[in-house]
Image (cartoon, rainbow, N blue to C red; front, side, top):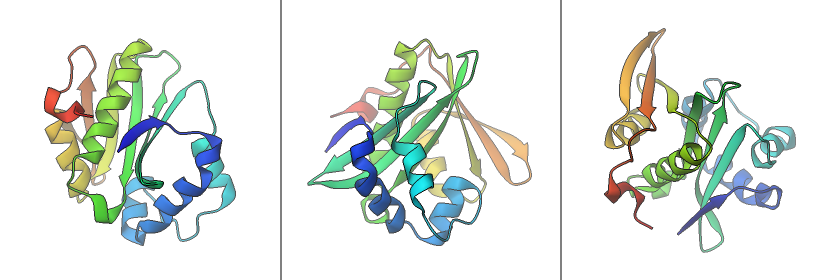
Length: 160
């Protein structure tokens, strides 16, 4: 498996990844119902943008997962989101995507990763806890996770 920056030519791979998610998975990722995945939604996640990092995990010409981090204007934090193909979960892909994003964000001078998850998103909670993200209650069934980038993620989470 390789993890690299997502690019416009990955549009088909990214679409296949999103289609592999069920309705609940897409709701947990996007915080609203996403019954149809159209070209505009896909294009905005594969297009290079200065204040966003997009990563894709690929093996055998199949997208196993993707992650995005949206950097705030002050470059103090970046909001992280990840999705992993259901049949490839619990194999460390989400953690490796988080570690790769953290490395790039740290290189860009960002001080903290934040992520929002619904309380019942057990898959993301596992990724976050393994990365030593700190949970905070945000209200409304949402949990805020924080990861200061002054420290490295555990070495076993960044194994190629």
